[in-house]
Structures are given as structure tokens and as C-alpha cells.
Image 1 (tube, helix red, strand yellow):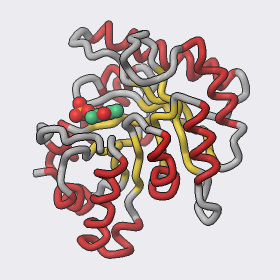
Image 2 (cartoon, protein in one colour):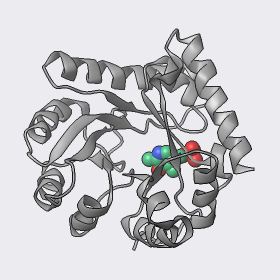
Image 3 (cartoon, helix red, strand yellow):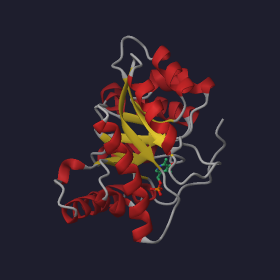
Image 4 (cartoon, protein in one colour):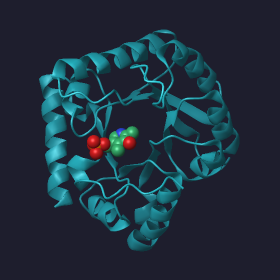
Length: 238
Ligand SMILES: *Cc1c(COP(=O)(O)O)cnc(C)c1O
């Protein structure tokens, strides 16, 4: 069933890319597995999916352990882990050691810690800056005005590789509104590139708005519900 859902999502991505005149391989799929048990991740792996997104460090570490047992060393080693939830300073070491990407960097202090704590034996940690263009103060993400300063500071850190931007616009059922929010993120992305930053990743779009995001230039969509079904009750962020 997860295999069918994955195929459905891959078709939606391909259709949206074609409608936007973009090549089919230009949008990566991140499967968001938060709250879902490791067995479901193993099922998605069996259907060909390799990149997974988790919101909570502790929950992700537990799943990595279980998957090492379920898939064996080689299978588990083929997985690519993205942290997409807010990151507190006391969790940066685990994030720097165990993840391949951190998409939720919104403060220089967190970026510095990730750079300092990234093990020398591993490739630099891929990071995205999370931007909050709707200006809701309670939400995570850095405001548009401050994003360029943070991006240049992060790009200079030795053990990080700044790849681009991530955004979670306020949900809307209106396609024009969805597109306008994604367009603002893409314009910021293009501005940073024009300033000389070598960025290749624009992470935006979820189960309900991936088409609008792809039409506005997303290179990675983060899809949970459309692959794994409704989430189980959210556990604490411990
Ligand atoms: C949960 C989550 C998603 C996936 O959302 P769906 O609507 O289930 O596809 C994507 N991005 C982030 C940051 C999330 O927290």
C-alpha cells in the first residue's frame, strides 16, 4: 500500500513538473516519516524510497537503530536522513553526527554548533535555511529581511554545506495564494544566488500543496500523509 502511495506521489510530481515545463528529474521526493513506525519506513525503502524526513531528533535516532536491524548495515546505510523539525541547541550534536541534512537552520548559533560538531570523518553536513515569509511570530524560520545575512554566515562555516532554503507557508486551500507564498520563497532563493551563493535546493511543498510548489520552482517536496497515511497522535518532542 505504501508502494502504491509512493507511485501516486511520484506521478503527481511528474505531472506538476511537466505542466511547469520542467524536466521530470528536477524535483526530489523526501518521504516524511514522523510518527510512523520503522516497519513503514522499511516498506517505503522496499518500494525504492531512500530519503526520509523526521521532525524530532530522539524519535529519529530510535528509528535509525531499529532500521539497522531490519535492513542490515548496507540497507540502513543507503538511507538519507533529513531533519526538518525545529532544532534546540542541546540536540545539535546528535543532529550533526547522525543526519545527512538539516533543513531547519534559522539561527547562526545553531549553525555554528552544527559545524563544530560535524564529525571530521563525514562529508560536510548539508543544510537549508528555513525561512518564514508569512511573518507569524510563533512559527519557526527566519524572517525574509534577516535571511540573507544568515545565509552568508552559514555559507562561510567550514563543516556545513549550504544548499538552499526550506519553507512551510501558512496552509491555504486557494491555489493562487499557495503559489504567491511559494513564489516569494523562490524570489529570495534567486536573490541569494545572484549574490554569489551556490544554492541548488528549494525545499517547499507538502501533501496538499506540492503542485503549487513545483510550479513555482521547488526542487524538493516533503511528503508525509500522501505516502504514509494520517499520522498517529504526535508524541512529545523529548
Ligand atoms: C509533517 C511535515 C511535512 C509533511 O506534511 P504532509 O502534509 O503530511 O505531507 C512536511 N514538512 C514538514 C516541515 C513537516 O513537519
